[in-house]
Length: 492
Image 1: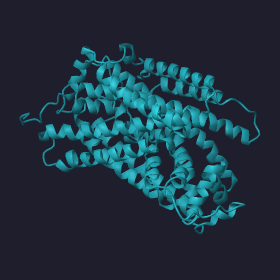
Image 2: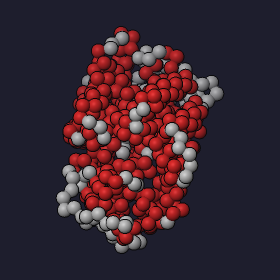
Image 3: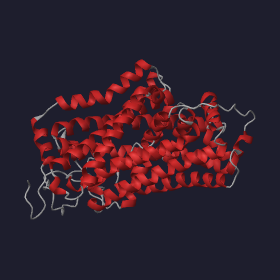
Image 4: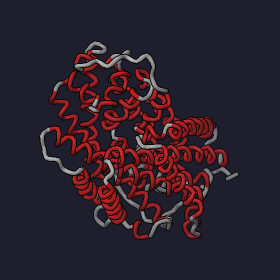
């Protein structure tokens, strides 16, 4: 970590990771976690078919604006946060050690859940792809196991290797969607309808805007993890803010435009009915759209890249969780051996091995339970992660607003970006949390009872984090909120 920042107290007594990740490297890590091709294939048809039809791109645009508002406070606070670890270090700095520890518990549950969910999604997608080309029927968990081995090997090594692998995967998956979008742009609106034998009836009514927003927000999970790689960034004070804004811009723009092109492909008057037809009868709306506009070859490539997108997503979340565990061990919230780094690779190898072992256990339990990999595993875990992520961003925005309210001298003349915008972000994120909870069964695809239990898991993790107090960890976490005054100014 770059310790030249004159505004924060030193904390060199803790173990540090090292690396030379550039802004682009960090962006590749976090955008890959958002799995753009997976979101375009999954979330976009859901936002159209269950949400407000042809107006669904506005849901992605609104989500982008909310996350931009969140990023303003997040970035403004970054120079004053002394540790990697993203949410819990920000909340600990702004709201104190108890809130920081509670946030750490929520973060671990959230990222572990989404990683497990993606293993299920990958297993299902791989089995479906092999079946479609006439291959043997192999259980989903064997495909998930193969992905687990690859992720374990890459996660154990230097972070730059993961960054390079993710960069290639990300460029390919975004590129193939851009080719599809370009092909759509040169065809008349509604041309794709001719690819269906039976054109679904046009519906004059659509779903609520809130559903479109809900599925839009779930597509952004992972973008905020820029600060997790703080110690491995080349120049954290510049790299992390730049990477955060670029991540929001790239993901938000890509999702919004791709959703708009999908609407244009089928025609704004019929796309809601088409999306519902696909949701009710199966099939992949995006792959069929690509097949009509670009031909079979690009569609086959897209189907393969969907699998690499899921693996890239798993790898990104693996790296995020291992670094959370590494930092938590530095604060004695987890056992200290998690805070060891590899002598050659500079990676949190013990934490990585533990995360791999945890994934093996969880995937095995899911396989033994007989749960459906898509609805049972991915649906339930995505539900937990969605609630957890919105809670984490809400807490971080509150922490930023409180931090600068208590220390206005740290950013004189910047009240808009340090207090007003974070406050607006708090209100918007609270609204989104309401949307998520009130429409939670739409995310999980499960019944009300089990969905309620799943929604309570991140909340329970926060409560446990508040009450599971250890004096040593509280003392160390308290260091986060000690910020030195600007040179030549009083702390007042």
